[in-house]
Image (cartoon, protein in one colour):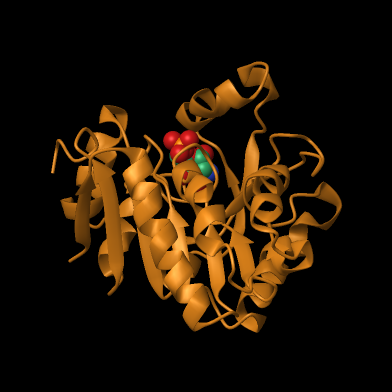
Length: 240
Ligand code: GLP
């Protein structure tokens, strides 16, 4: 059973998880972080610089959950660019130790395997930050994703493209495909931290935490993991 923490504000959640990350890095400077994108993890990333001040972060490694396929890594909304802007630069991490799946079309056939190998070579992910989509997705594992899935290309569902259109000029600019860590990949991280804020996430949170284990609600895969912390505000907790 996941540990559920209800906080008053996203900023409080950010502070809580940033403290946990700082403790880990202090204990193990080679900590491997699993990084989520989207708006949900931003309070964590905003709280981190103050908490990591004075710690040696030169050997910290990071792996993003997912990336759009066919987007230029220099596009401001590519997840490579987002992770660079929100995490690597403010924290002063070594950019060569922070990875995103490679969404370039030319190498897409083996990009999933390459990413899995890189995670394995780093010794696996210590703490994986997760958001949850309104479709119940974690990473970009849309409904129908196998619980055993590994990093691979997926087609984004219409709802996710609509949700993410706010980051682009229009929905037509949102890529159709993504490359995402699989549910099986995510479940191998040693500690999962799922964050969700706002009433729009309440149904997905309730189904992920206490609904049936089903690939139609990919977030329910977290119930298979022995060490999960779910941090939600009152609104996102309202259907629990
Ligand atoms: C995005 C990301 C997910 C994220 C989710 C929720 O599309 N691929 O990793 O958790 O959808 O996004 P947000 O946090 O902006 O609500």
